[in-house]
Length: 332
View 1 (cartoon, rainbow, N blue to C red):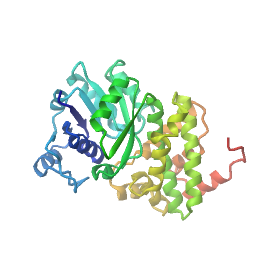
View 2: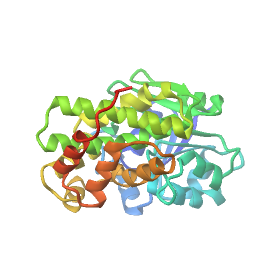
View 3: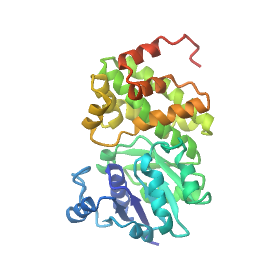
View 4: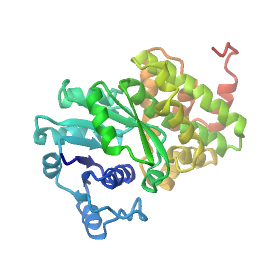
C-alpha cells in the first residue's frame, strides 16, 4: 500500500520533514498559508526562503488548499508555531476524514491557557483521535542535508508512532518511539526558554562553566515541571529532554539561543527579535512556563529570571546576579 503524509506548515521544519518523507519514497503534500510562497515552491521546486540548497524530490508536492491536504492522507503532521496550533486545528476540523490521525512537530504550550498541545487536539478534534508528537535535537537545515539525526515520536497509541516511524526513519534519520507524550511535550517547550538564558549568559561574556551550569540546572527545572504535569523522569534524560536542551543551548543555529545572545550584548527585545527574523518560541514559552510553575508550585528560578528579562525589562546582568545570590541548598 502506498505511503502518504500531509504536512501543514511550509517553514524550515515542515519543509525538512517533507523532504525526509519524500526521499523515503512516501507521497508527500506540503501546505503553506501564503499562496505566493506556495506558488514559488511549486515553480522552483525548492524552498528558497528556508532551505535553498535542497530541491524537492518527485514525491513532494505543495498546496495552499487545506481541503486538498485533508483529502490527500489520513495522517496530518502539523509544523506550525505553537501559538498558531489551535487555530490551525480549528480550520482543519470540518475538513478532516473520520479516520484522521494528527501528529505535530510544534514545540510549546497553548498561549491562552498554557495547555499542552495533546490536550488541544483532544479538545478540538476529539479525545479518541490518534495523536503523536515528534521532538528531539533537530535543526531543520541538518535534517535537509541528510546529516545523522535522532528523534523521539511519542503517542499513547503505539501503532501510530510506529506508522510515523516507518515513514520518517532512514539511514540518516533514526526514530525512537515512546508513550510519554507529556514528557516529550514539556521537554520541547521549556528548552527554548533555557536556550534564551544560555544565550544571554554567553552574550554577557560568561564562559563554558556558566553555560554548563545553566544547562544542568535548567534540566532540573524541566524535570520538576514535567513530573508534576505527568511526564516520566527517564524521558527528560533522553532525546526530547537532555538531547534537545544541549542542542538548543549550545549551537547558534538555535534561534532562541541567538535571541538570548543579542539580549546579552545589550539589544532590547524588539531589536533582538527583528535581528532573528523568524519565530522565537521561547518568548511566549517563558510566560506560559512560569504560569504553569506557579500553578503547580514548582521552583523554576532560571525560567523566572528569563521571564523578567523578557517581560519586565530586568537587566540581564542583574538576572544572573539574582540567580547566584539565591540561598545555598543541596543539589539533589
